[in-house]
Length: 434
Image (cartoon, rainbow, N blue to C red; front, top):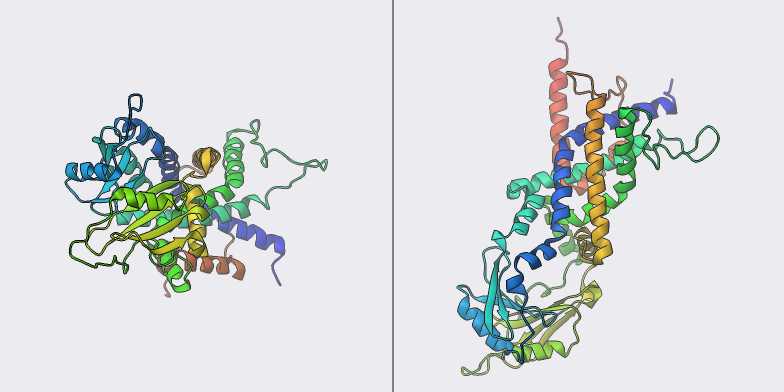
């Protein structure tokens, strides 16, 4: 005799609820920390502008003329104990010119030059800054690669939490009451007069459900930075030619033409003039040639991705060696950049406020889930929901697990370990034949 649809649904709900609770207990503490650190990091530019205001901003009240960019470059290079790699032009008269010096890894160590006095107004050592520590805590738990893998594992299991939570919550809610009116309590609103347990359960389920889709969007912007998934994504982009075009990130393989030993590199002002003639939007950054065959590489960071370009310029003649536009960037990289910008609140104040509210709301939902769990669980027990004896998930559920495992390596590894441990425990509990 076949089991009824209702019994299968109840069994599946209990089974998903069990893993929802297990995954939540393991993941939510880290997720809570990610919500807090991510919310703080949204204001990195505001904080850095305040903390390093003497270096970043200049007094224009008595300014008459500006030093040339070449003179400013020479001032920065004379001050710096490492080669200057690039210059970022000020976007208005109140900002200093920013020179980036060579540093270990990808650290942004900067020298700021006042363009009116041609003096160094200050420096910025990224590894020593507060926001750098916040970012490392957010992405790596201050544990390096091991921490990055933990964050990736938590992010992978969060998808399981979201899917299982929606399934558990959705069938258990009738959208209308006995009178046929739209039910609000437990769906749109939190019931406050039905006891603490119902209050905290509603607080978790209502907030988490309505925030889940937005949290998944934020997650999509953060997970490309992870170790395993990020590396796999880069491999797919390379194989499908859906990433950055060649020479977008660097000028490797391009070179300036040397016609005589007495050639001298163009002054930085001439390169700025060439770049300005292209009417590039946003903030302009110029990478400097580091040897005799190197090139000037001009790029702009614009509000809209499609406005971004990259220009590689011969350091002697000023001729354009190669020009790249955003239209040449592959679809996977474009999607990645869109979601990463959304993740960091870079699409204006509305985006930043929305991400902040989502993170804080989800943080409250996390706290509510923990309170609800401890109010529900019996003393001395884990209080995990128990699926019916002999229940096994159907093929659709297994297919979803396989798809998630294929997409997220950290999830696949953890599921494999869970299966191995479960089989081992089952064998230990199996009664021995007399």
